[in-house]
Length: 176
Image: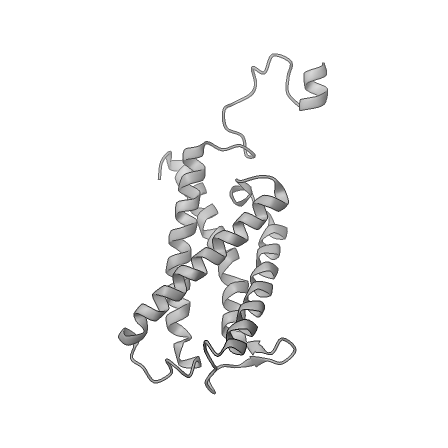
């Protein structure tokens, strides 16, 4: 009775499995993180390349000439996505929150991404690291470019959703 009352487990633990939604295997969690990184690389590289005309330094350059610059930016974007996930781990106390996230966690990652992007844009513009071309719509109340704000607001939740979808797809088939 004590085990059932305090741990929500039967006293003999016979009904317990080694993997519950809150404690997946390390292999499953590792696969999830690998998909997070890979999905983040792909979606952020596409976004970075698509928005290059909105920055003065790259506005009139060819796609191939901006690829290296965009790839470096993408690696930083992946770090941001991983950092946002880490904040979710700290908030939930659960390293596997992405495997069973609900709408509120996706909304929270969007807000964190928007806040981080706003800070980065302000710092970079103030330091002269980049400047916007006439192709960049500005968000007046945030004084930052719309494309980078949308990028960090939309792509982290999308990345976590893709990784969760992939995990569900692979869980039903048995392997990655």
